[in-house]
Image (cartoon, rainbow, N blue to C red):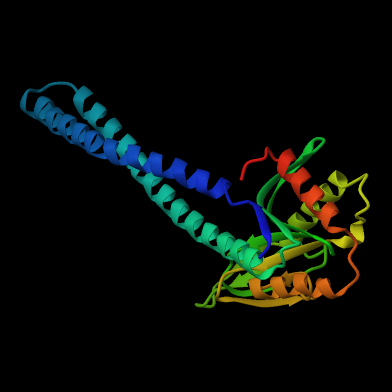
Length: 258
């Protein structure tokens, strides 16, 4: 098994925020709708039975408008929570495979915040090994993924099981930026750019990869593990102490939080 120094935190924190928000909206729901109905009924009686003004009706309508807005927000937050849970499950699947299938001279940092100068990024997974470093971006796309790994292909397509097609941004652009920032952080070490590999992992079980030149760049979780392990048969570029030093250094620059 590999050494895992950090686990996923940002999605978990966002889920906690959404949970608190939904609890608040649920508590407000009865109060808002109850107040809106009371003022609307009172306004109708006041206006048409007592020949009063429109004030109470307007207030009731305003309260109903606020309640409707919060209902929409509640639906959006519920969907976001579901999406977050699915994405978190995908990332934890990849992290678990890396931890289980890689050798004990490999170090894994999940959900790593990296800042170099004015640039910063979040790495889904980073593997530090004697063979080099592997920057991994995990996606939870399902369906047939159609695209090209060239920089000129800015947009890919995702065809779902029902045949509907939607555009998606070429994920290689993001992962190459993350790799560049990592390489800037590595300046001064003996690890050269050729030994830093950028991988996009499609973790959804129903993802079908139909990407041009996807080999060694766009992989399933199992393929990514095999890709990294295959380097174990090549001459190492880092000693075990150097691997640990690099991994611990990244761990510390990210705040040293597991």
